[in-house]
Image (cartoon, rainbow, N blue to C red):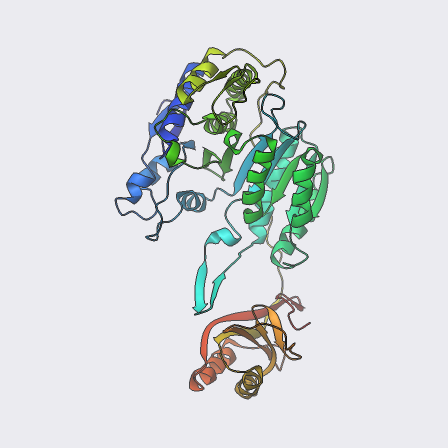
Length: 477
């Protein structure tokens, strides 16, 4: 690999991927970007070889040995247990920060929000995207949402560091911690702690529902947004669309040592091979990649040429407006128009300038706490009455536990059931240690008693206290 160039891996992808990547690579070449390109095959053709992840073993070595990965969208086959390649790569390389700038290009591209300039920083590994799911009963499936202190700290600190490096004034956190008091509550708590370390940057927190409504209504009030995985996935698409078009947004996936760059849209197979697709998303992803590789001047050169192309009315079909656009062009022609404008700057739109990359910071030590086992929640399949459940569970609790709670889909059914509450076959039974602290042996003995009574239990979750405080949802109330 050439020492004076940044080594990158490139995947042309599926559907419209090869067309938009071809246009982008030509722009990168003509711009003088210092890149040593290594092409890899991923996606549909690899899936169809029977490789469930869509990536061959040798490709991992290429991704590991290069400084960045520029990836066109791919197609994941339906059914057959095929796994999302994006999720696989993000998890394997711990690409914890998903960064999606969403800016308005009004009046060139129509938008109801001409002042919008938002950057969504999304946690990229945890939450429901761990993909851990189970079918526990004939009527009920379950997905686990995993949130860690370390994961929260990394993404929240990244958001503040990004704001600080790129002259952003405010970081806003979105969570749903009025309901998810432990998981989203941890994210909010870490946000407040880390915000104190950045006194020059304004900070605020919104509950996700009203925050999303405000984002859709007045996005110009926001600057940098940071949020857990699922919320960020949804709202970054919303933000891109209300800015002008999802097709005009690129994204970065940043880890401690690797990084992947891509458009936020899909492979659009029905548009493939027609020279129709707008390559702007992957062009902007390549610009983000150059900024990450500390080639900010080249990044700005390309971005200003791209802005000038938009400003001159050279538009693909998706943003073409009769009477406002000057010329409708295809994928290839749009790329050529950008190349023709290298060295020029827009006159109506705000010119681009180099963006500073963010260097990941080391994590703080996890606070030391006293952990005690306080009891257990046991999930069972049950199709009889609540009264029958109560009698059986109180009998099985034995001398070590008190049976304190039964819920159905989270709704309390005992004690004090409401007759109107709809129930299914999926029940949670809570047992608290009579001596306040339980042992693993006592829980195993409880399970053995359930086995002897032919209770169909499918899952146990231990209840812990940390420093004497319950660290589990208080469903008794």
